[in-house]
Image 1 (spheres, one colour):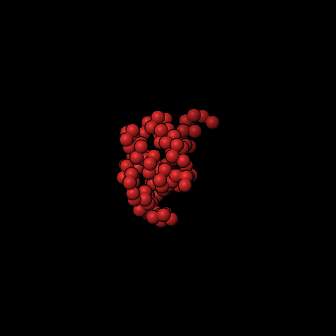
Image 2: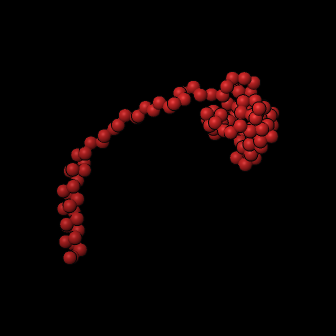
Image 3: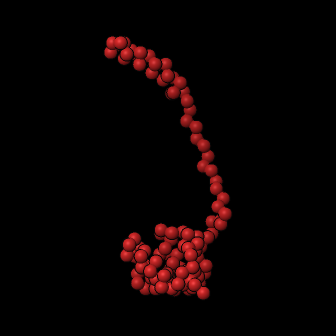
Length: 111
């Protein structure tokens, strides 16, 4: 088949489809609403250090994510916070790190 014949056939096909494609309206769908099982107000339990952990850790983690971690010893929480600072470059001051470890040891620490 010659090149000009192929071009003419392709042009004819596209011309036939163009009105159908152009006539298809854009269908907008509403954004679905999702109800999460824990609601919108999940936060850290109130107490000494809750404001520090919220302001430092929720930049990367939800409170729910943090609170659903396993129970760890103070030393293990210290290692976790240290890893966030050294490996992941979390901008946490040494003073805030101590407060966060104290909070986690109290809220999610081993009895």
